[in-house]
Image (cartoon, rainbow, N blue to C red; front, side, top):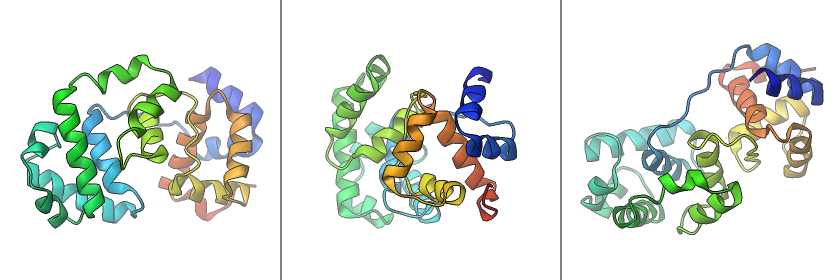
Length: 201
């Protein structure tokens, strides 16, 4: 990743300071695409703490990592009992049902372009751009994803650049491209380490 980090440091001096503060960047990907989507759906518009609590309840309900087969046999009301809204419970049930009869649907996403993947994922009601971008970033490891909708990214961004406006993030993404994903990972890590309390100069 030396070429990519060198490019980003040259393109964006403020990001270079973030990268120096963060140090070596862990690079972990989700290995179960369906389980990732379930947790991403749970996490929509929720704090990390609340989402983690509900996700843990869902895992306990189905006896481990969510699988389409297990969720097909799980009553929607039981999911709501975990703290899910009716809409999220329906989305998860519908996705599980679809993947039970289209078993290769997620594995086939790897052969599609970013735009085609977004289109395939967002055709499911309840899965929007944010959820699809999280999948592209943390499951498919696509190199040039800019999830400007994401609250955590915006929180890190404002601490470094003084604004969290969508247009500002988009413009900065033009500097980072074609390595937006790596830039975002550094900003996520910067937030996770608690470094946002001291704004980068």
